[in-house]
Image (cartoon, helix red, strand yellow):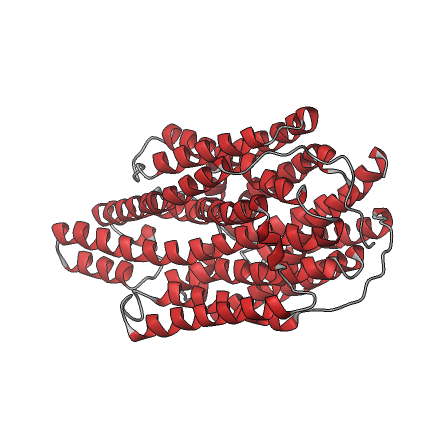
Length: 505
């Protein structure tokens, strides 16, 4: 494809990517109010995010396999239709359980949009040139990430709109992407024999789901060391083992295990898992920090995360341009790992009264690092595989990144609830009085507190608890970023190919 043809087709892909990321980020700053209105607590808060990540994670390998067998154009349009249906119903939710269930449907669509965008880009453009265009995807990711919380905050704070419009607003973008892709995306048609590994898809989804349910409920509904833990972890491991057995025998496995014989693919996949933990922990828990630790509105909460998104925008765009010019990509991965680790380590020191310029600097470092790593891990993987495995390989990296995000949000969300309850109890006990006991009961129950209803000293105690609790999230997530950095050191840099993967239309 010529450059003008690529840009026209890319416009539809970017719209689809924008829609996918917008659906994930637009609810971030609205979640405290959404969960409060629907009568949920910290567990529901976490699962509204995790449900989408889980469905996205579990469906990505299936979308990638389907992309190797069917029309990529038809598949991404199908993903857009699924997303639109889920968004409309999500806006009608009447309870946390209903919202979580519909977010699963949204996640299925988002999984297709995110995974297939990478696959289609690889089918159109050679790896050597792909860095330039991957930068556009990274920039779109950044714009959607920064505009999502801002749009969501404004919608939530506008009385005549309300948080339900956070779900409706993405529908026009999805429809526009659908129409643009229909007119601009042209890829050669390759007919292949269809073999879908449904058993593998079901087993990997069940294994991931069971593990996430355990992480969310452990320490709250039952002890970490309990028979429930043994049953859930053991069941997840058993399902995982069955998945590996099925994949070794499947004629066309959903995740070809032979891909992991390649050292680069194995390392980028595991590194993506830890990058996912870092990336999603930042985007999900910053809203609670700014709204519950600093008493900011939903709109201002979005504004205050701009430094992180600006860093992501700049680094993803600049690194893509330099990779296209020089063909060198490993230095960007390593540098990104250093910056993410440093940023998260510094964020673990923040408190509710930390000067904003310090928090902004730490967020910018984290954003710069994520922008350098996220797209380039996919690029390194795509450069290693044959055209017939392009869809599966691209989805494997996206799968591990989303899996890391889902595990991270679930585990760190449970940790946050425990830490906040502990810090609040200590602070409120020192104040004493019946009001302190009531406030302690509210934070200990896992409910999202209404700070405006608390008198000054009690509100300060609760804000301090949330500030310290969110900082602890980054303290536990920073080693994950360090592991991702160490893994990138062992990735061997190879010359980027100058031919495309091609594939079905």
